[in-house]
Length: 397
Image (cartoon, rainbow, N blue to C red; front, side, top):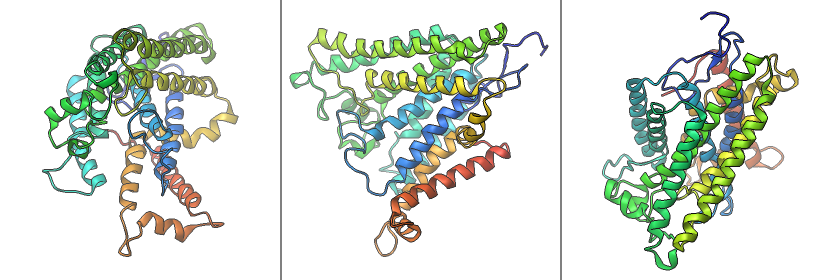
């Protein structure tokens, strides 16, 4: 490509959600996405390492949001941003669908490992990786409709109100207009589609990775795609004008503010009109929940963009950020790999004590087994990510 085209980008695969484009002239990868994913992975590995999870910190049983509930939505929002980078120019449908099939198959294997069961009659069809696969497919196909941040902002608005409409209309059939485990659209819909092959075989009354939740998670992914396309558009203008990443501050903050306003609109308008309550919760991945997290994730992306996406980058930031960037480049491996590893380590040793607890007790320093165990896991995944990054090895579907 000729030198006078400084705004063009190079894409390795139209369906690769972990690829970030590189401006040809500058030859510099957009690092802020990897940086943000790195921070998310530090939080994820830390949370996964907790041996005894406090109830106030663990996933909310139904209504409300606990700290653990924030991590996967941030991952989904950043994945939407990564898909925007990957599909900024074209969408290759066949490779996209192939990757979705691989993710779905891995999801079934992931469920078998996490649930420690090879009984195909009780295998859960839905799951975290299957939800992620559905989002990759949907966001990829929607890129056939639009590749602009304005288009994706419109999609986010439509999806937010569509999901809110589903929940609030259904809530009108519930006692006191309140969605509960016994009265919510996920229970009957996901049970109809998957039968006993859903979380807790349907006993929980909903599926947190079922069809209803996928629609809510798509709000997060589309908000992430909006942020990704906005970053690309602003970067093109900044490079053409010879300006730095600070150009993105006003538009990124404006879009994040828009997410907050939209969250308020979905939380109040339809629920008030229909006389029902719309909770902010992860179990059904309500739109206000998705949009508020997307706004916070956008601020994190903007901070990384201002600090790292400059030529040259600030050395005082660049060097310490290397482990975060390495983690971000292999986000799929570290995120799901850490979950699988901890699932295995939580199984009991022959004496009945979980393997993770025995390791923590054996390596404890200063009488703090949990702290030592967490630091060990963080060091393991960080060193692995750095080694793979130096060798140019990245795990992708």
